[in-house]
Length: 317
Image (cartoon, rainbow, N blue to C red):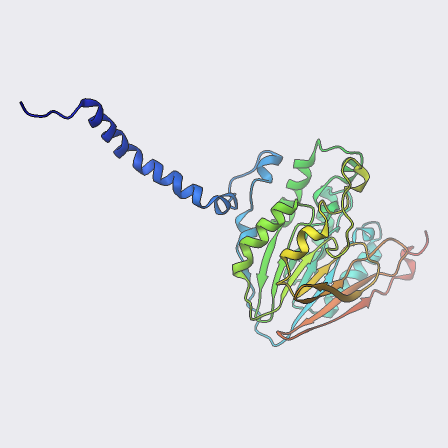
């Protein structure tokens, strides 16, 4: 009597043949969880979805076509005090135009209340410059500070989405013949910041200096305190959580509440960061922008004081 293969074995074989492509797909996805999580191209509808990953514009490098021995940049931050002083804002823009730099780096807090009116005004002013603009978001730019200061998050999705709609990204990597430029969101969690930096690291040209540009200062340990809503304007992690992971950067440049041009050194295990502060402070203080002259060997940088119009009432507090 001939041997008959049991029906159950035949059925199991058919099931395995059917399931193999599906199982292979699952295994492939499980081997690359980080890569998959970095892709987010749909339209987010909730704050969770907004924080789910990174937009394609944030992950791909903007290759700048500049072919010069020296790249000139105007950098500044914390400029929302100008919003109620149109004469000073106009002088600010005219000063930048006269500098005729290759790029403009805008390092956070360009609006105060993150309103449509503020953004429309600020961006229309920046368009007058006629140069490529690059942004790193400040806490005012991504939040409704009057809510967050009181511990509320009711409209957080709307606030962050407004920044995306106006600027187009929270993170950015760019590069030209002289340097790599990486702009990060210091309002984010340390996990997301490191996830982004680790992903774009292979895109950096190691033959050129790497500049990490932020709104908040990385080398100061001014961080949020859990349960204290009034500290929300500080970064949500300690400097020690980030600094060891960015030692391949040569320059750290921030635009936070500084009040004057600053340049110095910050130690790291393989030498020292070259650190630069380009942020203004408040109404009634001298106002400035910073100029950076970048080659593949070094950066020359200095502050440029803004001539405040006498009839602007800037100093009449």
